[in-house]
Amino acid sequence: MGEISVLGAGAFGTALAISLAATGRDVTLWARDAEAAQVMQANRENARRLPGKAFPTSLTATSDLTKACEGRVLLLAVPMQQLAGFCDTNKRLIQHKTLVSCCKGVDLTSERGPLAVLEDTVPDADVAILSGPSFAVDIADGLPTALTLAGRDQATVDHLQTLLTTANIRLYSSLDPLGVEFGGALKNVIAIACGLAIGAGLGESARAALMTRGFAEMQRLALRLGAERDTLAGLSGFGDLVLTCTSEKSRNFSHGLKLGRGAKIDPTVTVEGVATAKAVAHLSRSLEIDMPITTTVTQILNRDISISEAAESLLSRPLKRE
Ligand SMILES: NC(=O)C1=CN([C@@H]2O[C@H](COP(=O)(O)OP(=O)(O)OC[C@H]3O[C@@H](n4cnc5c(N)ncnc54)[C@H](O)[C@@H]3O)[C@@H](O)[C@H]2O)C=CC1
Ligand SMILES: O=C(CO)COP(=O)(O)O
Image (tube, rainbow, N blue to C red; front, side):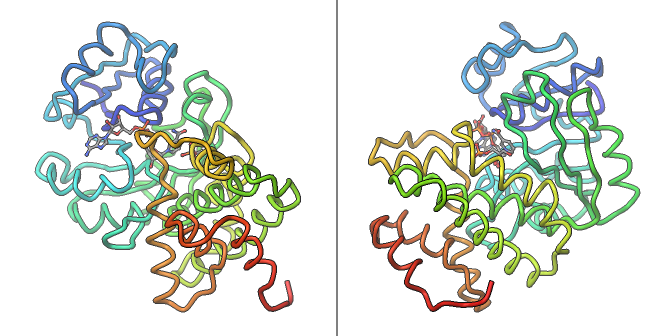
């Protein structure tokens, strides 16, 4: 087993493992399902989540978590709402390791981001977060991407920045993990809002307004929680907001788009913004922070209001300075 393992063989975990292994290093990709791991290892492909993207020879897929956790650096690529439970269940195996969260979301139970969840559940680990604009399929195709690697400890961040940079993933470092985790989480909710607007035929001008005013409310919450303004303006905030709100490759944007068009939703698709909207709407209420777009998305997802009622309500808010 090599130094790096990716835990969670979904689209993103698989793409990261492919890019890292393409550098020639041994990389382990752990899937919880034994049969899925065997088939991936034999066919050299994750046909379910990332079809047609061949595994480099130095990538090993396994369902043996003990073996996968022999690596010193573990990238956690499970859905956000599974992260706390996964870490808690497997604490013994992952403690004292360097854990890098690859999740984008806010935990519904604790209303905390992925780095805080790791710190709470595995206090003996070194922790960091990887976030920024990148579709799994782009990474797996070897297309250029730039992401942010953030942590609290300079030495850990420096080490991971070098270790996890690949031929097509350029990493910038940050010592503001809170800004990075909240940028990555909050943009998903705004992407749902943009999908809803486009799907319901409200137009591209409405999308630009939602992105800009959405960015304002992302900053309002993140800065109040202690994030730095520059981080929100960086890859993991503004950068990912732009990508996710403008591409049908985004599951969050597409989720909104489908709802806006009245189309059928596939419940098996990971759409992080749904639970995050709920968590953030609650958090913003308790902190008395005005987040009208996030709150409206939650109301639409709960079917409390229609999209036209939502548009009407956002447009008729009291006029204010930008
Ligand atoms: N797909 C993408 O382009 C990107 C995804 N991300 C983030 O990566 C995280 C994971 O997303 P994807 O890989 O895209 O999702 P996915 O839906 O493709 O895969 C999730 C994987 O996690 C596994 N899983 C679920 N619960 C688990 C548990 N309790 N224990 C172990 N494995 C479990 C599933 O079996 C599945 O293989 C999300 O937070 C997402 O926001 C970040 C950047 C890009
Ligand atoms: O985070 C992403 C791109 O940076 C992926 O977005 P989705 O989860 O909406 O597909």
